[in-house]
Length: 84
Image (cartoon, rainbow, N blue to C red; front, side, top):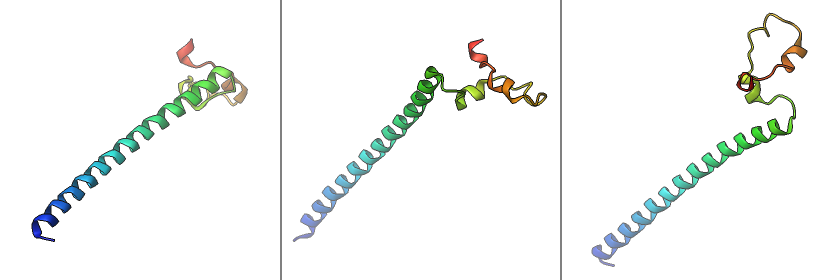
């Protein structure tokens, strides 16, 4: 093969490699976004079903009296601030 043919072949292969790289990056981004929404909806589903405290609701709970009181039942029965 001549140098011209080899150069053209290498240019085509380089373009294909760049396209594959961009496609992989887009797929990784889409899967990351899907994972974030999946976690959000799982937590929301568990909260709507009423299956105890979820990590999100525990984070939104007023914890000012938790460290003053040793009564853990009071902590479990607290309503999140968001819904008051």
